[in-house]
Image (cartoon, rainbow over all chains, first blue to last red; front, top):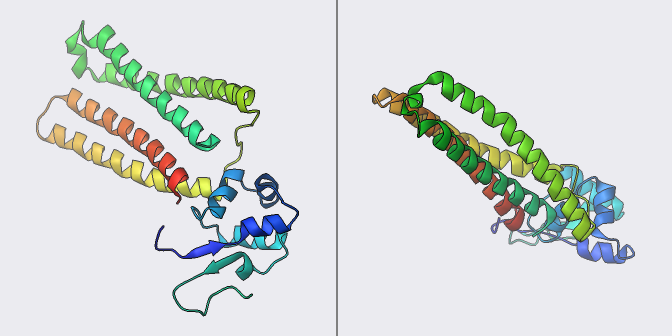
Length: 79
Length: 148
């Protein structure tokens, strides 16, 4: 897992969504809280379906929730 | 350690206890008195078939007790649903368990091919099933802790 350079802003987005709890996000996306914890900690990379669900809940483009760093600057999140 | 990891740990301990208890029970009550049963196919068939309901029943009872204790101590419900992460971990651990069991099966066949007594076949087969089960549960805990 160490070679994969996918990071996410879910913790920050939950904060800006009125300190949404992990359980609330889990309930809205249909997964368990443990899965949300694993995603936030970079221990699990969600499927596209779950990634899109998360981005829709925060009303944010997918690339602002998840970002992929392959060493170049092409795929950095839009700021 | 979160609830899922604890649940797998309980399941692992249950598997270990049932296997050790059942093996000791079979050995002490049957094989110690009557070594001739070691090569009795009918006895092995009955022993295997009895192990299935015993282990299923024990797992159910232990999980109910675990759920009750968890509810009382932490006021949390055990996760009732499985999601995509659970399914991915299950697939990965099942693949490993599958290969361990197949290796055991080949080993058991090799024992027969080498002219060993039939009980060796059954012991190798049983042990491979047990080891596959234990390793898949240990791997599950590792995947939940370290990520998948």
